[in-house]
Length: 101
Image 1 (spheres, helix red, strand yellow):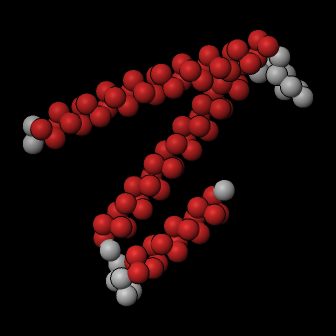
Image 2 (tube, one colour; image 1 turned 90 degrees about the vertical axis):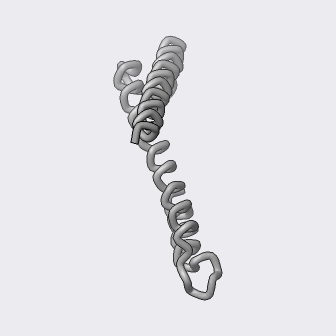
Image 3 (cartoon, helix red, strand yellow; image 1 turned 120 degrees about the horizontal axis):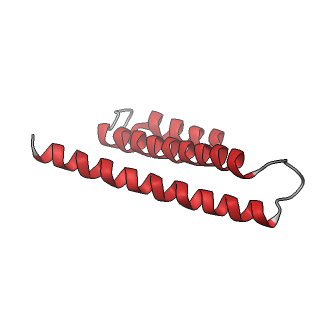
């Protein structure tokens, strides 16, 4: 998955959007923003998986029992709720600080 995304990014980035070899700063910035968003999403998923696995799975086996499934679902819901709350507060604070500049 990562190699396909990275190779597309490299191709688009190197081509400069077909502008005769000129780099388009706007295109580059958009590609960087996409890369950052993907990295943030991957980090969120990895952290959530690690924390919920440690919390909910006592003995790894071939399948999850009913209580493990419920625990993981609830853990992931709580983690996402907390993440969203922190993200909203952070974005709100950034907007206030930008407005005061």
